[in-house]
Image (cartoon, rainbow, N blue to C red; front, side):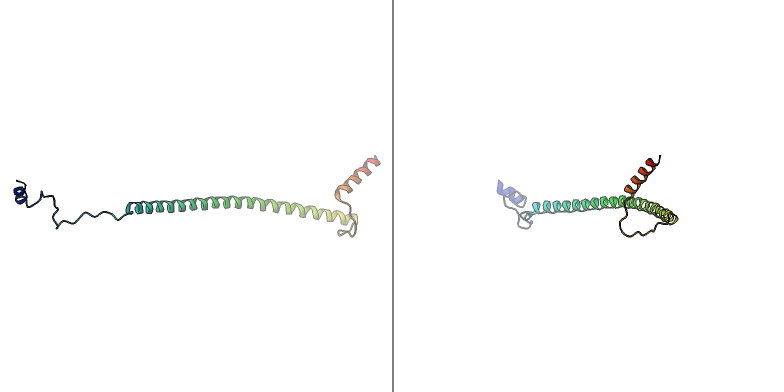
Length: 126
């Protein structure tokens, strides 16, 4: 009876596959791990790029802060330079009025010592 069915249906129910059908192809060994590996590598590359971009953004923010602080520092430096120029001009004018050379040679006592001696002289005078 099996033979009759096989003949009737053209051998479709036999245990042998017809040779005209292609044999199922299996992926090569390691294909799935290769694909997973490629995906992992792609993910790691993307994360590396994102990390680098974040680092660059952070550096840019710090540069911006430094620029702002540098500008403030330069403004303060300019203000201090103006104050020093004014003080020097006034000291030179006072020295000229008192007949004191502006470029003294030899020992010159410090401002603190001279101020102390002035204070002592004023206290003794009173």
